[in-house]
Image (cartoon, rainbow, N blue to C red; front, top):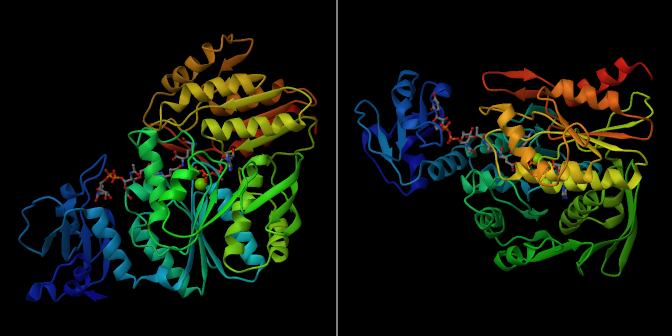
Length: 489
Ligand SMILES: CC(=O)N[C@H]1[C@@H](OP(=O)(O)OP(=O)(O)OC[C@H]2O[C@@H](n3ccc(=O)[nH]c3=O)[C@H](O)[C@@H]2O)O[C@H](CO)[C@@H](O)[C@@H]1O[C@H](C)C(=O)N[C@@H](C)C(=O)N[C@H](CCC(=O)O)C(=O)O
Ligand SMILES: Nc1ncnc2c1ncn2[C@@H]1O[C@H](COP(=O)(O)OP(=O)(O)OP(=O)(O)O)[C@@H](O)[C@H]1O
Ligand SMILES: N[C@H](CCC[C@H](N)C(=O)O)C(=O)O
Ligand SMILES: [Mg+2]
């Protein structure tokens, strides 16, 4: 509970009228979640306008309202601000008493590798005996409690609530993914980051950001929030800009450029990677149960981050070895069959390229790729992913991902443009099977010994979002069933 007058001081608003002397029991940005005594923050969204739901918020018990447009409400206090999302972030942080100040918060941003890097950092910290919290695409972990995540980075209010619960569970360190949407929409505005990590930047989300430059600028915001150290991949072209814009000191990592932290003698197998880590005059043999050169980058980011918090390389490397894998990231599906099956979350051109190149390193037979692209997301990546599927794969099955509000065949047609540009022939080089389960079964039926079936795009997801409903769907389960149905294991 906090008095409305005290709460809105964070917005620079000083009001000592009687109707500001009321208790606020909670904050809500969704009218459907308003309870008695709540402050409702009306947001002008992309699909809806929160101001349209003020009446229902009041009916649900709202005691006061924040708006960014003029509205006619006489029954309860109405406070107008310039930007409701910014106000929501400030009010939420104050309401929960700035919990992130009492936590060591590590923020990881980049197009690919955020989830993986956060899992690696979490694993290392746990091995060091630290009580950790994790926030990201797969789940939010608050001490021993886990909740499924619906966003990669939660809305500011939810984020501050999670931090507050973490403190109650005696968590000391939080590792979180920071999406470009979150940076652009002020979800992390009031988060007190201690370390910021940059993985890489490649094409994605050009539906949301106006241009690649805008996407880069959104990501860069994470490095302009404070003067704490950042851990940056200097092999990425955009790192120069990010380093130049960073307010704090930079610890760089990379394979190709002279970085503070480097990996040498890299060995890649189907099960993992090993390499010699170099940091100044120190070096240490490092092993990781995740495969692909891209995971060498993710692990360097993780090592650099924990090292910068003051821990020794030996104990860090020991923690890194503990991790068994990240759900849906190059996850091997093994039912004893004679061919390989991999489920991976690659949903960008760069991610797909990395996964297919990695598979090529240890596959003697064909690479059969099953993929689609998400609806209501960046359309520009569709033909590019189409091209990558048929050029780096030996045979492609184009299917649906999460079509959302779009028509699945229209998405597939846009993917096919990139395939046709390569002069590939339907039937010979690729086929189209709209239904994802049928596509996966077909790929598995087509596989010969030594081939590999690579199913990308949905990784850990246990659902498929269709136009009018969300159904249970798990690539890993569908693949396992299909392998068993072949009856060879
Ligand atoms: C583009 C985007 O990020 N949109 C997010 C944004 O939506 P919005 O502001 O447009 O919301 P809206 O639906 O128009 O509604 C406006 C307001 O009316 C309210 N409302 C709505 C209905 C109602 O009955 N009552 C009511 O009060 C809503 O709660 C909202 O406050 O704010 C909402 C509330 O927090 C989010 O749920 C929503 O995420 C949408 C669903 C989404 O798909 N976001 C994705 C793209 C996203 O954020 N992805 C990134 C990861 C990307 C990556 O790096 O790979 C992520 O961090 O998850
Ligand atoms: N460092 C990397 N560079 C390029 N591709 C990567 C890297 N790490 C992972 N990938 C690829 O990207 C996919 C997604 O990885 P991960 O889930 O770690 O990324 P993310 O940034 O969290 O994605 P999202 O934006 O959806 O949250 C992986 O399944 C893999 O194919
Ligand atoms: N965080 C990404 C996930 C994409 C996963 C893919 N399965 C899809 O639905 O496009 C996004 O929201 O764009
Ligand atoms: Mg993620």
